[in-house]
Length: 456
Image 1: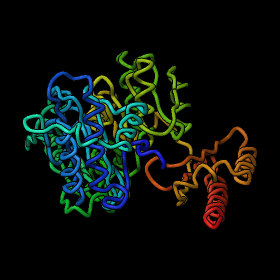
Image 2: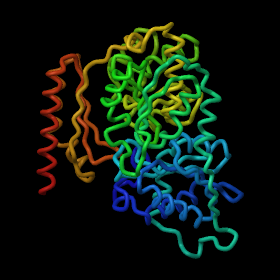
Image 3: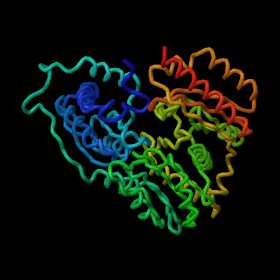
Image 4: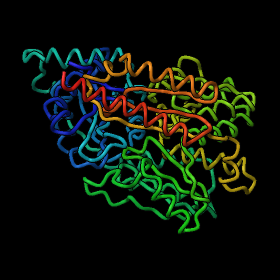
């Protein structure tokens, strides 16, 4: 059996991979592990995004938590960072979010948070997984007044929005924003948030029906947002993903500003005020080499980790850094939050633009970083075959040849996705047509090896 937890919780196709039975077992196991040191009746905060399977899985997860003797405060539809914040604010013992983030509606997932609002380290997830496999003996189940209670907190998302407003520290008067809420968890909070700060807001992706979350919208489909920014003559566009823990921006010229661009501008603003801890940004191996060159030019340092915001966060906590994130738009601002938060990132990004810009548009400010072309090829591969293919001699030899051809002017990165049945081939370099050809070549080798391995 493969590891239950991936890089971002438990995830899979709802009712096939992530079943109500499994959600119930995860609920029971998580309640046992995350509350074993408490000497009171423990409490979980649970939230969900807008996908159709959330009701089914929330019911099962909550039932499992209650069956283990823990109370549940259910906040309904709320952003993932909202669950993390509520867990801290309500002094709960743990939190859980039901979401598959940027994935399409048929997928779902369960992310768990400790009492301090942080995602769980591998060793705690492994302990929960062990309990899931071993089961919960009937004789250990609480009965009578020891059974957990369900408490509804319908105002949870509004409480979280009020918190963001209280720390916003930016006036958006005169700013024209287009916001794409991905028909996800931010659909009823983000428009109100930016309007309350004075911005004129044009919002779409705010009509969730259970099936349209991330459908041709949100942070993974920024082309639609770019079109609206130009059409509306807006100052900027902001796109969130399904659970609103990541952000992608579009500048006034319709050009994409990914996590690397946002990290660069945020770092410049913080460093100018001596608020960038140890003058360091934490990013991943996927971050553009342009970010590395930018930090060097301004006397900063870029530290890279494995892909996954959890690994960025772990390194930030270990070394005392305050700013980190991923190219995909997960940005962690540790002085303000315990996890990536798309709406908070937008507030801090807008504040940085206002403080640095002196009236300059984002299209000018973004020039602080010069991005190199990157090509990413995703190849569908069964989970059980990923390691075998990545370690295959044919592929390793081909990668070496490409690296030699690029010399010092580019880099090659092959990795397995932690959330999807994919191997990702990324090549970076100054010549787009050349790296595109190399990426296609390596992807075709992965495809061939996948087919061959499937027949074996």
